[in-house]
Length: 399
Image (cartoon, rainbow, N blue to C red; front, side, top):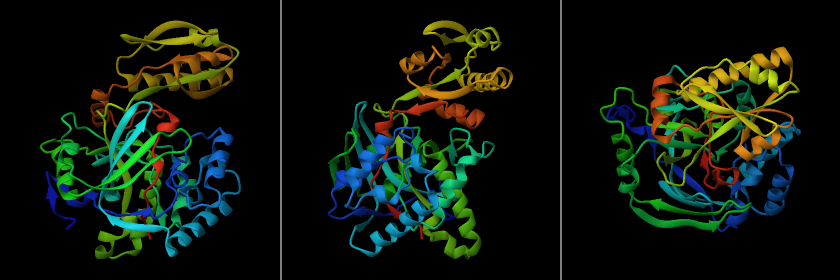
């Protein structure tokens, strides 16, 4: 029952879902990278479309964000129609349980657990002390298109990755493996993935809950990737539940969102900083106007040459101050700002502006920073490279 609690956590905060997997499909063609990746690289998505052409594929039932301005209403209608066609045909087989996902990438083998979470226990509001919290500020302008994509969809496919804090690896240590559900190479240099049914889902749930037993500020999961998709799911659920009785709301499929949970200490999970670049013809003026203080330092790069400037030891505070200064500078002197992954990639741009080489948040500090200060600034960190992001494989009904 929903009101039962373990370690002060409602029992169905983690929910054992009925997972839909393609039956007999070519998995190389089926699995597709997260929709918010490679949004400036049309050739990437053109190649994905070629691989998926004429075959059952997640590509046909997700909305790559590179196409958000390309006749979105028709694309959404086509996606919904294809979802219903897949459900009416023999595309899917159903399996209730959790899935142990072992993903081999250039960074190593990352291990996660596909499960569902109760959206009643999730919030993207900075001030909320929810059991499941966003990690970065949610950009409200990004939510309407995602809500529109989801509101009439009968299925969800997750690219959401949740992080949990398990330095002793208790959760994965509790897992008992059942049969292998899939084992294949991913397209577009995504590496390899293996999914195994977990035979003791309830035990694993309890292992998760034990991580926060006795804590005064209970945060079970932090959203690492896909926060805007999860926020859209939350908004849809808030709308759906208004038309339900209390009993209907307990088990309605839209209440539970499919995600993959990964231990923040997983050796193949790397936090990388997201640098700032300001396109301007007054880079020296930017450097001269830097008034941020602190006991640490960062590099400002102009024409490939780095200058060390003061920066707070509290990384989120420093990033907030840097973003505020960038906004003030652009307002006064013109220019534009961008978010850049990779030191070399940033340095290459600095012949047309100024770059700020920001530091990375340490894994051991991550959960503390969220519980003490709430959401981190937008674009504080990235988890892995684009081809290491979660691929759509599993699906779940939401209608």
